[in-house]
View 1 (cartoon, rainbow, N blue to C red):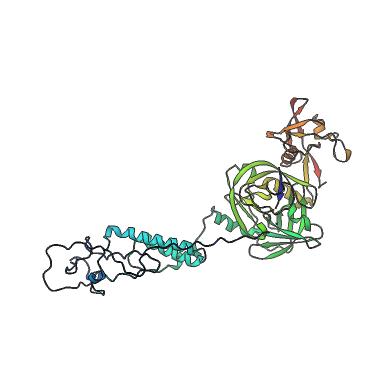
View 2 (view 1 turned 60 degrees about the vertical axis):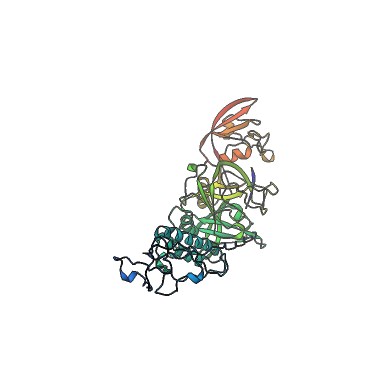
Length: 496
């Protein structure tokens, strides 16, 4: 599979939806109101004998005998029949109808709800406010957070005191994100992720990502992120707090697409990201990617592991040489600028280095401005760690090899050993691992250990997940017959 490495593009902010209308909700009657609604105009409400007088509103008494039968309930009495407002009358005057409610400015007043209906009325009022707050939060996050809390508090407590006091300890600034949540993982990881700016000697360059590998100031990233500035260019690394440091290349491996930088004047207290085990990753595991897509530093995206051992060949855009990997595939959004950034598991450990994306534009390798279509590929961290240690130690990469040149056509049903090697050399290196195992030109390698080999890039990607000296088993076809061979991987130093 040929893919593209990750460049900068603007985006449009979606419009804020209009605020929905919400009718007002009448205030609930105070405690002690008869269940049948307010008394008729000539009736006197009876106060409970055991109720504290401080909690019972003063009743208005009128002369004349009380009626023997209660008057029929009038759910919507006209204004002329409503009792006078004031502390000595019940019910209190109706609230003014907001301009956004149905009915314009005409007061509406219904029979007070009974105690058992009080809570549902409050919940409806609260939910209406939360809906409005949700819209307002798009343009005023701080105010929306405070009002949202107020509405939830009224709904939960059922209080009729009407208090709108918000406790400072419950304000959004004090909310804590639990470890293991995306927000918690991102908060821990972001201080250890850097945005890399690579400028070549002629002023050209681009943006990528890297992360702190150790406390000495080594930064792990992709080779194609720094390739343009590796010789006579300028490299800087900017942390999430805005602090910027100059950096230099310690070593890079074009074939693996891995590079190690070293911060000049590295600060104290660097926190390396923890490294996970890419061999234990399973399809469906949650993933978190951090990077600078299109120059937007400190961007966090999420997804899952979509596939493992995906054969990928990608280029750095500055040479005809490709990189090969047996990649982790993720649907977390990865775009130009994410390259070199960490792919984290749900616990915050690095399981891969984001390196390439599948593009619908062109279909070839290079640095076109393709966007994410949910097909991103990361170098497994186990492989990246081995390469990084070698680069820090010697400054040059070491590649495991089988000692044979194979064709690079994709999906040919196997990796076919070529008739001859580069520059007319033998396709099977004399006295090399493949020669010792009895392999010959024309043999088609179909499996590497237990992994099916579909092409030359697949075989190379699988070989490079191992180390020189590892024993492997190859399954191959010759003249229509299948055979197996065991061999010890050799080594090649440096990029050819």
